[in-house]
Amino acid sequence: MIVPNLVKIITCYCKIIVVNVLIFGLIAILISAGITSQAFAHTTVHVEQYEIEVGWGIEPPIVGYRNDFVFEISEPGENPGVKIGIKNAFKNLEATAKFGGVTKILDIGSDPRPGHYFSHVIPTKTGSISILLEGEINGIPVNIDVPVEDVESTAVLDFPPTSDSSSDQDISALKNAISQLQRDVSSIKSGSGIEVKSDTGAAYDFAVLGLSIGAAAIILAVIALVKRK
Image (cartoon, rainbow, N blue to C red; front, side):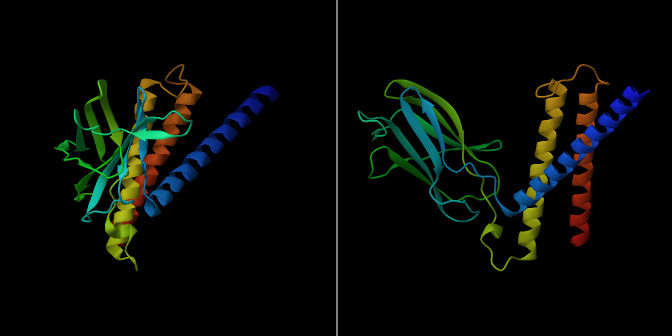
């Protein structure tokens, strides 16, 4: 009798730990997303010997404010740690900005510094943008999609903050939490990242329990947001 009771106690204790971790994790996501942006900053990728860095000229990018997509394309020099900028890198290379299902082929300008390029842009909506690079650099095929830092509302710069700014941050936090919840659901369905031996296994029960709590927390946050308005 002692062993079964001990197993029950350990199982209950594990469930409590999982629930607490999920609750505090969700709260942390909501708080951090409300006061800071999810930023990629400049992203660096490698294609053969070439190093390609993509980002914004001014960070964070703000809706309605002129900015630039900036590119640095280089290759290793003879000395360690030294990079050589690639001239005319966009001769046979095309850059396309992507926002959801909307795309725009960019006009690329050359910076005086070798290997540095830019494209003027005025962001019109908040959200995620990526840059698709297609073509070749000196005969090396290139086909990569590079994410850049998310475009933010003016709330990140407003001072003193307005009620609208606070609402924008709350909505952004909820969107991020919902996106994370959707990824977790997809992970459970595919079985990746979670060891599930059967639909009635303990790991599966814990995962479903955590997702239910996460969904409930999001619903409560939405209700609180509506009431405050």
